[in-house]
Length: 297
Image (tube, rainbow, N blue to C red; front, top):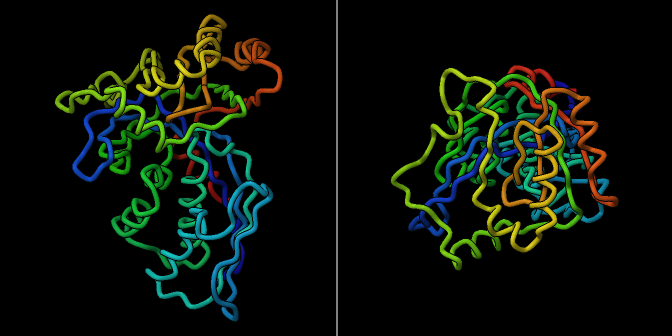
């Protein structure tokens, strides 16, 4: 059995996100299309049969290294499920900005689960793997699949969709974060939820056949809330569309905004519009086969 593996944890964008009614369990019913992109954190996972417990190191001091980190909790769940008595050591290199809506923490947790399986050869069933992922967070199950997926329920119920044509993707992070929990509380306070009767799956391009029109426009119900507080993000979205983006939107509850382009040249021209001091990432969409192939470094 190998003792070390290196895996990538890819970011996601939301090609549309609808917030429906609040559920009895306190969560909101949503409809979204997840899309994996090539921006990634990196994890080095090592096992030690002579040690116990979980040790996590991260190159970003702002990221917690204990149970507050989903990677740590993923290790705990996996150890318990597989009755593994040895130690797990993880080195995490962060590139996906935290609090951006790009799913970095969730992707890290899913990559840890998949990496531990690859490392040990002790595979969970699909149902058990998804169950563990859903316990860690609403976005985590998507990162077990990659590519393009429909997400319903609170986002944890995931259905793989056909991949769309590859697109260059510009992600802009303004440097401030948006709390997802606070965003949902504000959605409730302002009464911005929709009726759950019409999921509007057709709008999201969740169809067996597709065309380039499926890329847009992406609509995200959090934009009404987030753009009202940070109008500079709404202005950025308009600028990106005028610069040639096929679609542009807030991802998740923000604060990152993404734009998809049909060429790297058009993306580069749009990138010149980004305000100084904001972080930008030139990346691309990943199909499901690419996602699986690139997972292990």
